[in-house]
Length: 156
Image 1: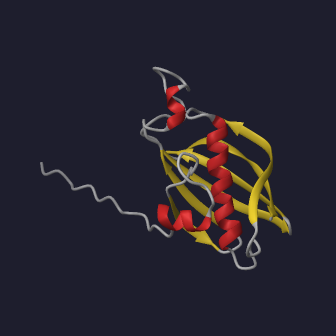
Image 2: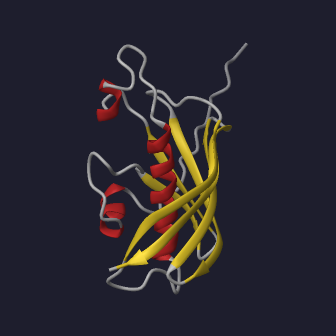
C-alpha cells in the first residue's frame, strides 16, 4: 500500500516580525507576535506566536515545567488588536500610540507550553476615539486557550 503525501499549505504572512516592529513600539523580549496572517480592515485580525523554550519568562514560570503566563497571552492578544487598530482605515491617529487600558471577561482554559503555536484572533467591537474595544480568542491546535474583551486607548 502506497503512502499518501501530506501537503502542508503555508499560510500567507501579511506582516512578519520586521514589519510588525515597524507598526508596534514593542521589542524583544516583549514583542509577543511573530506574524499576522489575516487582516480585514476595521473588522478582524489574526496573529501567530510561536512559543519557544527560549522565552525569558520560562526560567521562572516554572522551573522544570514551563508554562506561558496568562498575562503574556493577554499581552499577545492586545498587541494583535493593536495591529488592527493601527493599520485599519481611520485607525489610530498618526503620532499616537495605543495602550491597553482594560480587560474584561478574560478566561484561561488551558496551558500554553514550548512548541505551541498560539493563534490569536481579535475582532473590533466598537471604536470611539480615543477608545477601542475588541474581543478575541487565543487557540492552540484549534483548542481555546484564552478569550476576553480588551479596551485600549490612543495617547501621545
